[in-house]
Length: 382
Image (cartoon, rainbow, N blue to C red; front, top):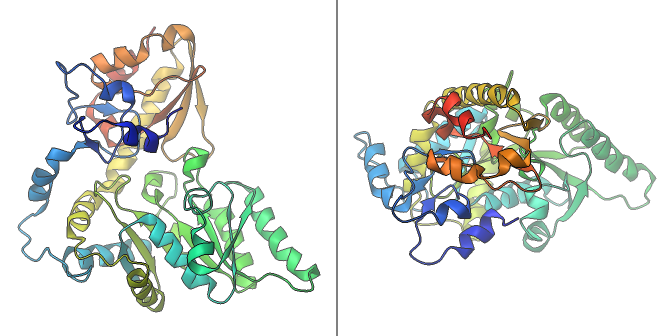
């Protein structure tokens, strides 16, 4: 299966650009006489609303709202400052720092939390371990210790086991930080429950270990029973949230924590080469999309459940739910349903991925609110 990154890299120069959300290759190759109506499309792939690159100037103009002090200088003041204060409040932390990338946010957080202790525990499926190469080792001289458990109770046992090893070793390793990703993209958006996080945080506190949340997709948990970003983030010393995965920014991330930690983070951002001249374009769009996001995504979750209820009653379809899912579900579809599904959906301006071995991944995002669920369900009829 072609990954999102491989698909983007394979796109020829001059091809239709759908910034922020990559639609399937079958859609990108659609006949030129029927271009993708990106403003109306229901995209059952990806986390974000798709936009054409040429729409960026109009989107920025619409986001101004009469603001006159937009610009920042080297990521200080302006819209960047507003965004930092907004996220600090949202996550219940003293301060927050704009970062150009999520990888940098993770790397700096772990660097700060570990200090002189040279090991970090992290899920073996995590972005830090699987997708940031050997960043913590190369940039900070910190050894990643991948652990089992994913997002369930077994994660607590793995953390406990690593701390337990220190009692028997003559030269025990010192664990400076525990990095938890939630939702976990490599586990299909599965989330770590607050109960599990609380138990891990208790172990961390007993051992003087810091806690970092890779919450790139944290706000996709909006609408889950009892979810509140401030409460969820409370056990963590530092928290990272992405600005482009679903908040409509072209790039960027937020790292939140204590005043002292974030002062250090700004310094490290400069050392790591991340103090770009301006970040206000991303900050502005993220701020505007953050307004009402929790309420909108709660509606997305309700619409997704209504759609699944329709699909469950249709022949040839079986629903496979992800444990503690954020916004991803799988459909097992029989050949009679899979045959021509992409074309049927495309004719209705609905985007679905290709069915692989009778299994279809479906992601819910804000485009789900653009069409009645009855209309969306109809394309799945054989």
